[in-house]
Image (cartoon, rainbow over all chains, first blue to last red; front, side):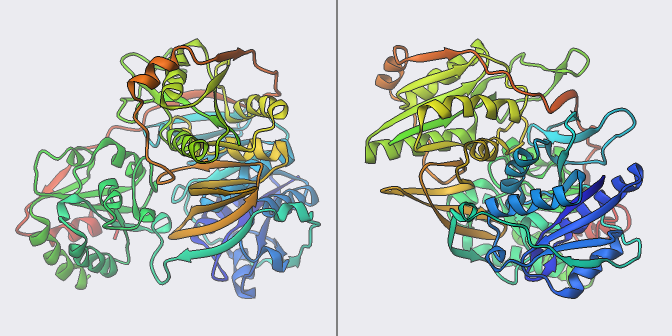
Length: 320
Length: 245
């Protein structure tokens, strides 16, 4: 028996959310008295992979197949299922992400496993195997019992801290057989913002709404975000009007974020927007309307004109 | 082209969420149920594809009789016929098994649904269905064009888009802006009443998970207000009090 954890990379490095998943997996492994094995697929630097050991994993399986350099949902599911069989895994842990969301269901079918996505806490193994996840787009939680022999869990971002415990990992090349039919989805082009902090991964998010009056005023949002090391987001009307790209839209039908700090500027706080941010640890709302519903969901608020408040915040942020 | 659109019957996005029966049941009192917003994008695109290429659009819902108004709305929007699997949608794997049972006999070219339901937010059903049928699945799809037997799609990834292609049949989990929602017109609403709605009993499946209980998040404390003339105070509080900087 063992626990398997999937490592997702970005430009050869291990994503923060993957380290959170590793800590989640090793903590669960400790509870169950079993070992944890990590699986990394695609291009990683050698130091990146061995550094996973610092988070308590003794072994890393590295799938180096060139055809898997880019995420291929079907082939990745096969590779992970093969790794789970090889390691006799009882639980497979994955970090929640856009790629994992697409992979995990196929993996669950291959392993005939019960699956829970977006776990917010460690499983309760005191009687059965129970996992808590958020539902109704962050408006509630449910506890789910997994009764299958193999269990598959994706861990919500920023729900479980990545903790270094020391140690180093042995990296082993793993070459599972992947049928040609797994390559029936062809990636023809990728458009990705570079050099930006990615919204779903960010610790701090600065978001702007219609109160900013137009795309030409986004300079100060970007500047404040830069000073804070934050990602930029926006409300649905802003992305609908093409002031900002769709991948910045935070809300019920856009990106759901769970940063440590969410700063909303000129966003009134429609319930659909709140659904995308209510897992944030701390929410700051800046709005000139004191009646804006967002203040009810906020930890800190400033009633004021964004065009006066934000430049002052930028100056203050420079001194941090 | 034969298209299946799977829809969920979910609380309107503005609903206040609460539970009854010792936190084991969703409280439906005063809650308006709608077609899942992501599913409605899928349905809208399906209808556009049918208008452009011919074929048929069937909607499928796994739900008890109370979901029929939602199904009729999908028919009013433009689906040709509907299938209701007569069972409570207890979890993603149960729902997927019901869709698979229908899809195995009907040979759809395209199976569309939302990227996730807005009640349980699992985002699993499209992949579960596709894996069981042995066909490709792509999600979240924000653009979908069909050229002959080839589907050309854009899917959203963190910080951008990825363009992918796959041959039909396939399953896609959809999201905006794949299509504009369609407002049903009077003719649509009238004809929806007489369009075929077939009720099918569920196939038995092995249960892998059980929902045990629900809970609401802890109530939020009061918002601390900072004077607009001294916004720099905010960072002091974020640093020393909230400890998030």
